[in-house]
Image (cartoon, rainbow, N blue to C red):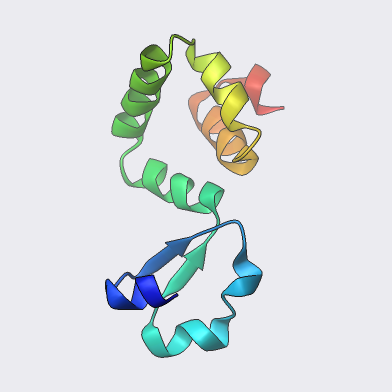
Length: 94
């Protein structure tokens, strides 16, 4: 929280929301989001760029997009489900 306040951040992305209760965030006008919600927001802002970056990331580590999404589904399953539904990748959306 101190780092967010010091850097004038508007958002903290974390899996551990319980350490950031609303009462402690409100005075500083800082929002907390989980990783899936944050990444979904990025997708919604610019879907084409998001898809492009996923393809770049997959290529950089020598994976197919499907394999990358499978790995991502371990940590950000909500994002992967949403992305697959939006992109019509039904086999991965399940």
